[in-house]
Amino acid sequence: MGCDIHVMVEARKQPLGPDGWFNIDNWQHNPYFGDKGEPVMTIKPIYTQRNYELFAFLAGVRDYGGNPSFGFDRGFPEDACKHTAAEYTRWGEDAHTPGYATLAELKEKAGTVTKVNRRGYVKKEQIARFKETGETPTSWSQSVFGPGSENYEWMEWQDEAHCFDDLLDALEERKRDVFWIFNPEKDDGTNDTNIRIVFWFDN
Image 1: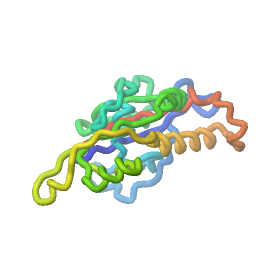
Image 2: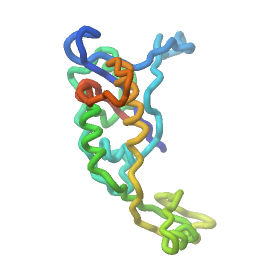
Image 3: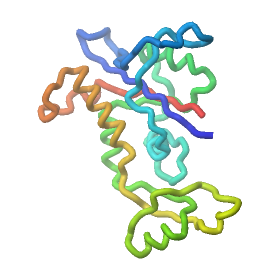
């Protein structure tokens, strides 16, 4: 069974909102409202990818490569905006491993990662190509069985770290939008501590 992440975005700034954090997600009317359990509004999330390497770094979830967790799985924040809290509550028991991190924290931790650890069953032809040219595998699996499984071997290797790129890019864009930073070159990072993700997972 696969695992997905749910990411919501909050910011803090006067006079846009009260002291503390307020939700800055893109909300839209839910065409399925009226069906059982469907809310009036739904979120167009900034991030929806199923990237297990990112999940592992954020919170130790689905850590198939043996990469260290940043420890952001510190529970649902007590000071979360009521809209964020309501969405988390709506997921009930399906939600697990909640956490949060500011953009500043994400950038600091991601900056310490130069390589990601990967391991799994890889086709022998890809292993041979890796040994010959250094080309890293493009696909692998945590288990293989049945006909054709003899064509795979267990392999452990390292590759470039790009698992943070899409999340960080989306959060940077949302920050510039909320804090009216029209020229990215003039962004000094001052507001990196004033925007954060609140996340959880479901299987």
